[in-house]
Image (cartoon, rainbow, N blue to C red):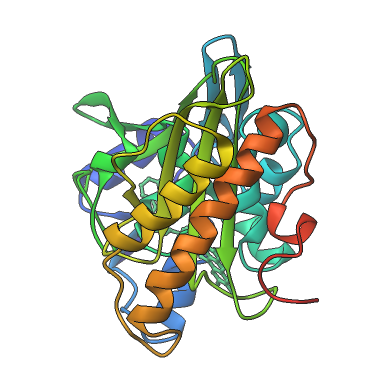
Length: 295
Ligand SMILES: Cc1cc2nc3c(=O)[nH]c(=O)nc-3n(C[C@H](O)[C@H](O)[C@H](O)COP(=O)(O)OP(=O)(O)OC[C@H]3O[C@@H](n4cnc5c(N)ncnc54)[C@H](O)[C@@H]3O)c2cc1C
């Protein structure tokens, strides 16, 4: 049993290579262990002092978000909350103010829950994670990262050091919505993110939609095309309901999830289109549009 507090990336990578598991904010790993979900790993390396992984860099190519950037920083960041709005919508819904200050984007992504709130936004934004180990570094798209609930394609010695999101094209924006039973300390019953690019005539030239909590991993809806905003929103609702593979559990039945994820997909397309047209809708869009749990 060992516990290492890494102060440099090299120390962290060496500990991982020796078999330790990283802990960032601990809001999944430690809280899960306290609730009896899984015992704490025998060997842990705390990475929360790696200040180099706490930066957000915005360039013409896009956004580079360090793995230790927390949800509060994302929801309030002036560029992330406007240009990459779906991600900020997702981060703004995580847990409570204290959870958002402790929980990191790296932890959310690497925990690989099908109910994670940054997952569907990152899919529609075309994000990649940067994984580093003593053997080198590589980038993998988020869709290829998640393989099953709690499982990723990363090796156990790989640390997520950053999430990269390409800059959106002109007249493009995004939104993420979730169905929830209460406003705080809640996870998504279902959720949907959309990224919409508008043509000069105001119709949809391109759209991506991804779904939360309706399959073993976050899934992207396939087969969506261009058209009027209303037609694309309706097509997204149908395709989402058709392609969802939900389970029934204490939170909702599979039928309820299948129906409501279609509703969320349609609303996400409509909200993303409004933002893409230049309209400002506050973060998170759930609260701004009165969707989800009542106050
Ligand atoms: C009360 C409460 C409410 C919550 N509500 C929500 C919610 O509404 N929506 C939501 O999505 N989540 C929610 N969560 C889950 C959690 O807060 C988030 O997933 C958070 O982003 C996890 O980040 P962390 O830094 O705390 O991860 P940790 O707990 O430190 O780590 C999580 C997992 O990722 C691994 N890991 C962490 N960082 C890295 C890295 N850089 N590279 C490789 N592996 C890494 C760890 O080994 C572990 O397996 C909630 C948690 C609590 C306790």
